[in-house]
Structures are given as C-alpha cells and as structure tokens.
Image (tube, rainbow, N blue to C red):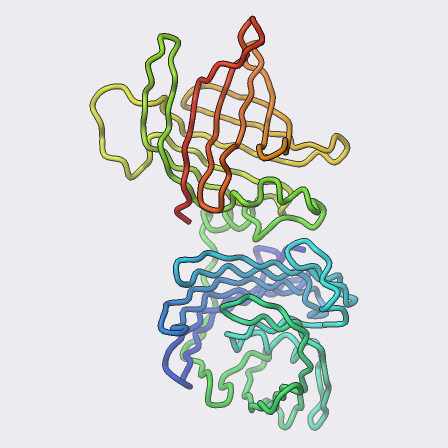
Length: 371
C-alpha cells in the first residue's frame, strides 16, 4: 500500500533527554489510503554511532501493514522488513513469523514516534484503558519479539504507557494527531512544522526503491538478495590477442518495484578512480534488472548499457556453488556466472562459447563489499 504523494505531511524532531545521546527526525504523511510514518534516528549506542532509517505504512484504520528498517552500526549494514496482513499474521524478511501472531502494532524500541500507532488505532476515551500485543523491534540486534503493552488515556492529551512484561511505565503528552510531545523523561520534542514537498529526485527514489524483497518471492529472494549493498574491485577485459585491460569499478544493488525485482548500477571506471593514462577495461555505466519467473522457476535478467549500446537478456539461477546465467549476444551463446562467493567478496565471469563448444573468458570482475 502506498500513501499518496499529495498527502498532508508534517515533520518533527525529538531529542533523547534521558542521556543526551540521540535525536530523531520523523516525517508523517497522511492520505485517503492511510498513513506513512518515517524517520531517521541518530544515537550513540555502546559508544558507537548508530544510524537507523525506518518507514511504517498503516492502512486507513491505523493498522500496521509494512515496516522497513535500515541500520548502520559498528561498520555493519543491516535491514529488516515486516509485513502484516492486518489480521495478526506477520512476515519477517519474507518468512512467516509465527512468534508475532496476534500482534497489532509495531514498536521500534529506539523511537517515541511509534507510540502514535496504537494511540490513533485505539481511539480511547478519556479514562479508558486497553492492552495490546506489539511487535517490538530491539536495537541494535533488530530482534523482533511480541510485547504486551498497556495504554491508558488519563487526560485529554495524556496517556500512560505500560510495558506489561516488565516494570517500565511512562507518561506521554501528545498533540492533536497523537504524536508525542514529551515521552516521560526520555524524549522531548524540539521542533515541528508542515513538511516541504518531496523533490522530484526524492519522489522518484521512493517510488523505485523497496526496503526488501516481496514475500511473493519466498526463498527465491535468497539467490541474489545477498548482493544488496555496494561493491568495488578490479575489472578485467580479456582481448582476442591475449592481452588484459584493467580498471577499478563499482557495483550497487537494491530491491526495487515493491520488492519484486533486484536492480543494480555498474560503473567502470569507478567514480573515485583517478584518471589513468592508457587503455583500461571497457567503459561501463549501465543497469541490470533481475526478476523471478515463477512459472519457469528461474531468474530473468536484462542488462542495459548505454555506454556500449548493449542490451543483453539472460536467464538462470543457482548451479551448485555458482550462480549461472545464459543468453546470447549477436547470435553467440553467453555465460555469466558468480563464483567464489563469500560474505564480502565474489567473482563475476563473462564468457562466450566458441565454435568448438568451449567457453572463452572475455571479462572478469573481482569484487569486495564496501556497503
């Protein structure tokens, strides 16, 4: 579910007054189809900077439907996606999360903003109390646990929050939209205003990028999902005379199109590379879109290279320890394969089949993870 770009928006900043170690910048967009709550958290966690971005999409009844979190901490980049059918069934990173069955809301442990979700969904009268089961996301582990919580409306704009699995309680003063102004002695709002419209660039990026794979992909997402992030390395082109040309390159991957496809951007030479005299590897600035054909049980790949005037279509998937994709270029069979795959490295080989049936290496990319 997408919230319309023309929705009424607000943006707010909170400061963590409990220890003066954090800030949050949040944005709320409300439209006919529902509400999106998104934000950026910057906190000091165990002496290390933690940066987390999140997006929560709710339907018109304030039922949490989709959650995405991206976190960077101690040099590690991690993501989390949650999907909720609105009736108690949750998926975590595309897999059914039985432990969260019955949860109605999400509670991101680092932010005061998610308290607004049950406040708006419950619409308690003054003096009324309700208990809920929330999907509680802990930071920096990104572990998700069911948590029993209580909300009591003690005044026109005041609520008491209770963690029913422990002894934590806090009083919250909220505004007319149910957004916290003061969250006990922990968070305090510093600023709020109508949000400026998204730029065309921001709107395009939000429309294209997805926080994670669609649950429709199931286990097939694992085939290429490990590539998400950034890579750099040495790009080689092997010429017919046996010579080899080299240049540094970079490669970026992200889920797109509501998580139904994986797209990359491939750049040679790398934008950070100094100008080098003499011939290097072929210049590349192109993109690939990968989508899974459920009927065929294999991935379909389209590579577009405006710099080389090339469009290649390949198909394939896992072959033992490798990922192998087959196609044609000008009538000649092509084989591109991932091999030597590790958590922070891989080799990508491009080969063409000769008339005698052997495969001849044309390109080799040795990549290492940088994001």
